[in-house]
Amino acid sequence: MSQQTYELVLLPGDGVGPEIIAAAQSVMSAAETRFKVTIKTDRRLIGGAAIDAYGTPLRGEDLDRCNQADAVLLGAVGGPKWDDPKAKIRPEQGLLQLRKGMGLFANLRPVAVMATLSDRAPIKPELLRGVDLMVVRELTGGIYFGRPRRSWRERRGRAALDTLIYREYEVERICRLAFEIARDRRGKVASVDKANVLDTSRLWRSVVSEMVPAFPDVELEHVLVDSMTMHLIREPARFDVIVTENMFGDILTDEASVLAGSIGLLPSASIGAAWSDGDARRRGVYEPIHGSAPTIAGKGVANPVGTILSLAMLFRISLQRDDVATAIEAAVARVIDSGRRTPDIADAGSEVLTTSGFSEAVAAEI
Image 1: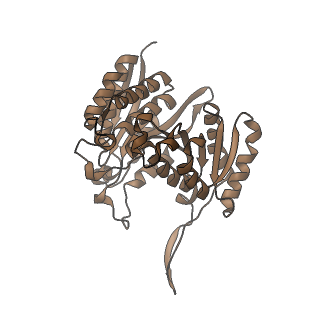
Image 2 (image 1 turned 30 degrees about the horizontal axis):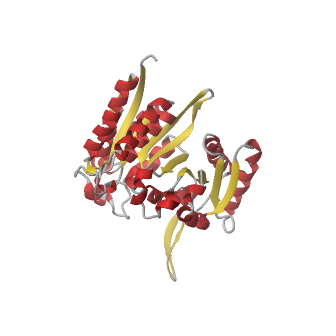
Image 3 (image 1 turned 45 degrees about the vertical axis):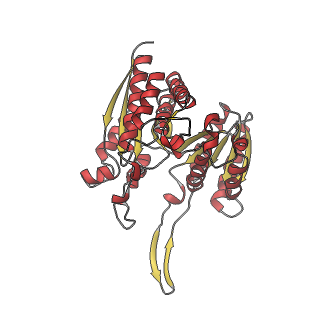
């Protein structure tokens, strides 16, 4: 295979972000050597770091650069320094600007339980056997973006309003993606809504149901969101692909992260449409699902697995290099299975590694 060159934007962000991005770069370098690819990186600021430097959580020129690159690898944003809920400028706004500005409408969060770590989760190991699911969360619609939204004071006290709105095309594109993903997995989709109460959920359920004839090889199940919170704990192995709206997805993915044993293990991808007809690559931002973890920043104990596996997703989805992605995932599994672990997933027999030590071990396996 001839030498291929890719351009990535790195957004380390805040807290442990710079440490885990550095860890991913070690793995990236090993992949460059083994697979004879060239990766050009451009490091930019986002979140609190950008607020401190520029007075804004994401500059327009940095967003433009993200749109020009093949993909974006992000660390984390936020921290106590910028936590004032009354502040007009907040780190998280940078993430929302990034997603909207890059047209990223879908958040993919795979949750697979490694057999050697099943005892790290607060769930009975027998319930975790065979868990391998993908949550597909709609990312740019729903109550987080609805207008109007406001707060006010009236005679009987304070009041506030948020608007939950979904349009047919928003539901159709996210659910089409979920069906397509299921075709390459076990062929099952669970669509999560609250159709017994919400008009938006009734629209959601109608649109999803109308898509079934186009995917005769995929089995569709409708699940109410409150029931799903129970099913994820009682029978998580039952599910393959779970698709849902923005707020429900935000809540369910945090719940599902508990299944893996540590929030530091799980990756995510926020992706948009394919580049063009005939080009299956998708523009995307890849990041671990954990936050900036300011209490452990700079201590070298952050788990970089979520970031390293996010890098693997980046190679698979945005660069269409499944060979590189598979090699990274296999290297991570070998290191963990050998007993080399970061403190959050270590047990009495583990060799405890630092953030950089773990990434170097993965790089060596590649």
